Length: 82
View 1 (spheres, rainbow, N blue to C red):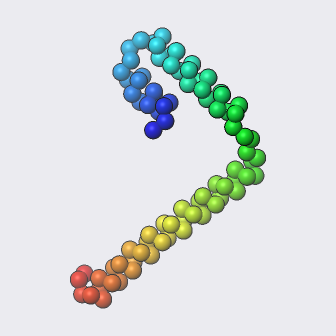
View 2 (tube, rainbow, N blue to C red; view 1 turned 180 degrees about the vertical axis):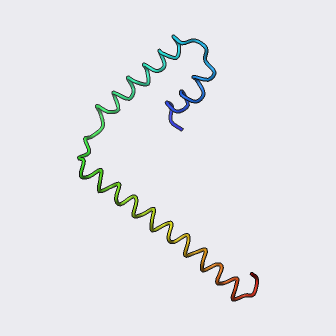
View 3 (spheres, rainbow, N blue to C red; view 1 turned 30 degrees about the vertical axis):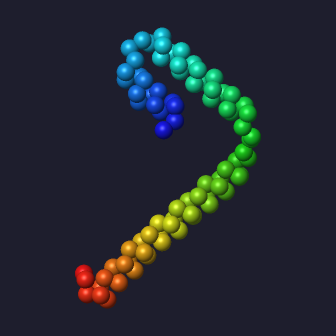
């Protein structure tokens, strides 16, 4: 879980001092800005291509899991254990 998620879910629920929460939020904002400035620029086309590949990999894995389950069910039927 990222620091900002922990901040939103835990710190905001526990901490009662609004000023302390604002200070922490500003620190995270500065940290985010530094990361954005130091990270390389990713062209839009490259981002879309990576998203497409990621979806294809997930679809292939999902199909594999389904096929594996069907194979296991067929094996059980063949062995008379179902």
